[in-house]
Image (cartoon, rainbow, N blue to C red):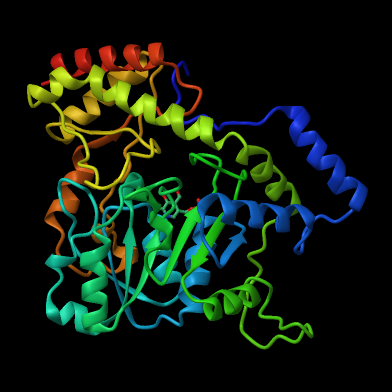
Length: 367
Ligand SMILES: Cc1ncc(COP(=O)(O)O)c(C=O)c1O
């Protein structure tokens, strides 16, 4: 594939090997080892947050967050997200009630939740879709009014900000995915950022079988620990973050510039970013005229070695396994028309130009 949809960014093999040598010398592979502790500390510093807990992946991060906050019953969430958001809720026996999105920002539009939906729910699970911060103040107001816990699935929101401050400090808890496909990764991995220390301490127990400091299983827990090998990868990549974020922002700006003509002609549209935030360059979505055109464009691009992906399709409110509660016409329509273009740190500006010119001709020759 000439242009894959994603390509993980890797440190030098020597840098990773130096970490692995240390792990071999200590012969300590998991269970709160040195790499894990160092990665947790450095990551919290980098993000400027407290109460950060590393876990094995972003899906477990959500499940642990729900358990730590003792969420039960119903939770309001968005239909326009990756399966893991709704799946983690159902897995924890919490019923997702889907609230429609804002068709411009692609994020949950809390103003569309009825007072019945708000009063029946115990939590709201917002997703900063493609890294675009949710309307956190509007969500806070509703959460206070209806006594809801707020969990942000921030899987895409590494390096996303509002007024220069990380989005991860919003909500009772925010979760990150550190999967290899993400802007910043530890091969597999996740992180949870808690507002309250007590929730963090409970989660620390939950990820280790519920053991207390006497190794007594005080809580019903699970194994959600990150291994030393995974933490070592995260540690190696931390120093590259300034380059990664800067490069991705440049790539997004270049994509938007190369696609400005079809955008002005109304042939495609872009996600509207939060007015007080900077695009973190995690994804490059474009919205086309309809699903038929999308399928034709996707096939034509693939013929030229350009891989695209239908993030997020299908709309989760149409999936029987997730209960199909709530009416979400905007989310359903967006799911049919949105296509993510290749986005990875090693992509070149030349590559962006080639992808854009192939996309434009594919749109022009589609019906
Ligand atoms: C919005 C969202 N939530 C959760 C996850 C799950 O993360 P992980 O793959 O690390 O389990 C993903 C993964 O892509 C995601 O996109």
